[in-house]
Image (cartoon, rainbow, N blue to C red; front, top):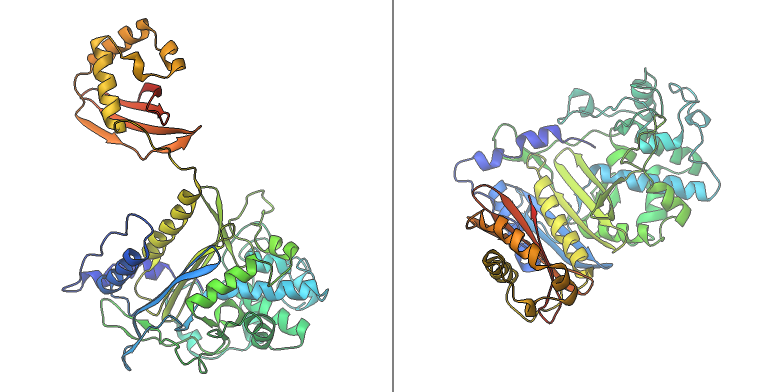
Length: 473
């Protein structure tokens, strides 16, 4: 599950070691060779053991590469199809299993937990949906960032339920969001009770095999030939193999192994309706409205976010020795997966950098093209116009008809005097241009000793100035 406080606290430790390099800045734009070089540099500079990165664009995997070692002891490299323990990314698979059973009429996501496990605390008041939304109030059994003594010994499902779902709730069901792995272990138990099959078998036969996720398994990595070993470190120490959680502790909450490319294939299948029906997908991706009226940013096994108007579904994961991240943009069928077998090195910034490059490139490629202008650069136009304004006479041949009418001699005189009083600008900044109404739109920021001024310039392809207005900052 959710083991990030410790990871964030230690994310800079490898950089403090003698000889560690400062990570390079991310590329300025989405460029696969530059991204490859950036990731390789991050792996070396930050001390990752191994890393796997996969990128999908328009429904096709355009990048899949491994970095570093999947095993230090055996000196084995991370390959594109190396499988990692993906922790809480498992939760979206668990929810899909629940929805598959709901579609068959074998359960309802609004069934009370009491229908399946009546002995649990307030089981009549907590629904399957509450478990999926993390709004049940059941205490989380795995809030820490290290394995304590409990998790070194196997635990039965019955003992898990008694110890963590048979006790006092953290809050009244439905009133709050609080991440709880406990709820997802219960969900796995419900899937087993309703289907009559072990959870791993149900997941394998209904999702992993039909989607041909050949490098994914539940509960074990024994038959995955390229599986990575998880590593940890304490207080600047060298990486050492991490002890996995004992049997029963993570199960339907986080016991999936997968490759980065398999997770992207899963994402695509989910949004294309190849896993659950549209109504199930809608419920699975709709953030929960709490009884207080507040809206959570979590749906069913998926965090729901937005980037410049694009919906993003995502989840991170962390189990002993591993950290993972899966982000997908349903509208453009594009996404990013980053998997690591070093729990002591944070990949948060790396994931954020790469995802921002991806989604910005998608959105910019869809934006109307900025028209090519017959004339000087925006900075030169603004400075020349300022020169004319402050001199009290503007060449109207350079102006569009409406702007020329708007720009009366009186406005030129009064505006020119005010701008002249500011003196010469000490700094000039030009923002990226964009299109509006078939025109090139530019913003030039002018810094003076006593003021900051923003010049808003609109030009048509013939070079005519259709607007050049000055605003105070």
